Image 1 (cartoon, one colour):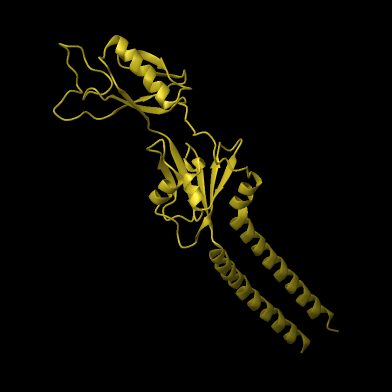
Image 2: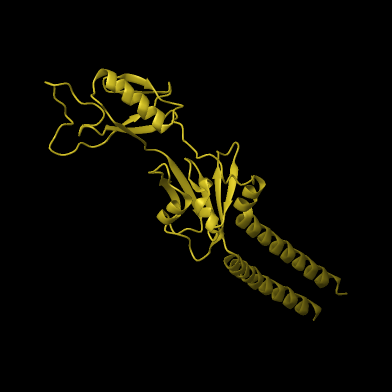
Length: 264
């Protein structure tokens, strides 16, 4: 006699269950996607490893100047003139490393630099200029396009340039405005080595040994991720649960009302 309303109620409750499970799974996937991928590529600590030295690559942007002269890179021979010469210090000049591994420099022409460290390239260029145009040059070379990306619980996520060879994790987190109140200082992760063969390093900023770990010296293309702390995760889950339960209760009340009306 009452099979139809009971069946309707069962269908309603089943739909509600699927809805709750679907939303719950969606939440977990969105919340844990980054963490799951990182955990899958975990690697041993490299504390005590040799200091990392970046090697110049094609498409890198180099900035060079001769510290022995106000002009950048080249001092024009006596009797010549240069557009760089002025009462004010000239703006730094930049040079791109081409696909053939060379950089085109004034007077020298193309010089192969790809595969060299910054120091090696500076010494090579310095020696070439000393034999041709400059007297006792001191070449200062900088790589201008090195950067890292910061995600997660920091106040200003985004990309940040590595302005120094010794820029470390703490420096960049400070540039990013520091951790938010949801950030977990015990779960700082660096994804290193590109997406083809990523290496994941874990750091606890509460551990004083982190400061002396050479692995916190950042490398170009590092990805820094700050996870949420336990309190933030718990609060977010409670909010998510409340968001799910409220429409669910309304749905259930509607189903019971339909059942009650159908029985009369």
